[in-house]
Image (cartoon, rainbow, N blue to C red; front, top):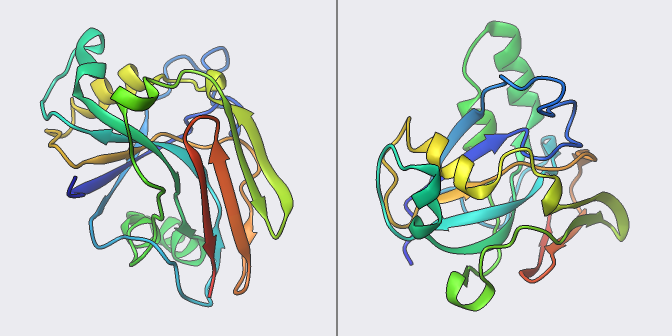
Length: 200
């Protein structure tokens, strides 16, 4: 599979801030885009943050995809680290500008191998976890996701025409924190393996 674009959905798990349907059932997705230059091995001395997420690999394109049909468009799943440059994000917020540079810098979205649906099915539950230098930072379960995979695909396809090779990061649990040069990052999802990266 050739990676074309990366779509990032903010607030995907219930323990990330207060994004629960019970608290705010009308909250919209926050969506950011990356392109295939944003690949593994982050490298800079500026401030990163750690969101670790389930990644959807799109296998069949479409637009305005119905929720009931959405899983037919999935090729497979991976685990990924949605790195954010918080220094650039803060500057953009202060000036009222978009966050694109904070989310779409080079090597900003490491992911694991993609596991085809034919091998792993469609994960609906299972532990998602992240450790930094051996210390637990994030621990949750996919069953806690506010929006499930079909809902995410359907919503995203109302804004963009999805194409094979698109990767969709689905949101992260609580525990997002700063990273520094030398930090060793390891995270995983039950049934999808794990991913290790290092900030250099």
